[in-house]
Image (cartoon, rainbow, N blue to C red; front, side, top):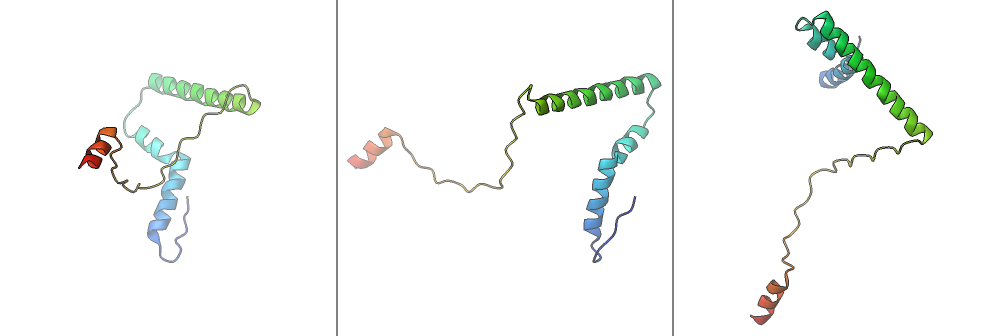
Length: 100
């Protein structure tokens, strides 16, 4: 794997490298190799991954064909919100202010 460093910007190159490694599954493989995995556990994990992949593929195919509705997109975080001034709109508060 190779990443070019442009304008001595090592931070940018590291970010690109991490993204590439994540996409390739290197981090997952390193975590798996950290400890021994029994062959039976490996088989069950791989079977579960295959089932997950096939279900995901079938769900996407059904969405494409219009058999099921597509999931609603999650709202994106728009950033910090500005605090809104507290306004008391109860009828008692208005009558108390008007009497004074």
